Length: 187
Image (cartoon, rainbow, N blue to C red; front, side, top):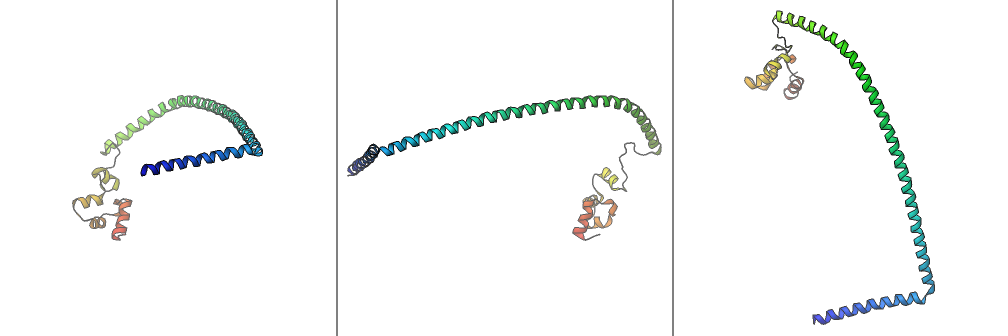
């Protein structure tokens, strides 16, 4: 039963398609005006494609000439940049030779002043490395202990609020000043 239905459907479809094909052939043969129309449309389409090809080739030539002009201007700008860089390097070389002569005299005077300041600091007993280790300044405390006085107190002895209250403002960082005001309302 299924085979019969399948065969019938295939036969019907092939006959329907064959009938459509025959009517199209008959209509084009019987109507000479339509064949001339088709020919005219084909000629028009081919002429349009020729026009498009011509326009494309003209655009291609124009683009290649523009790109060559652009490449030429870029190479000229690169050459001028290279000349400018060469002149700058020459001027730097001459200024470096002048600077070297003046820096040698400046270096000798700087070494003399450094020797005199080192002698003065060693005479006073101060640290010659010029890093402050004074515990009474924020910089010195940070250099000596590695943390601010407030953080040092909170890590070792006090609560954060007590550390803020007992440390003077000159020994607090700006972040600590903001925290004490925002968190505890201490001015």
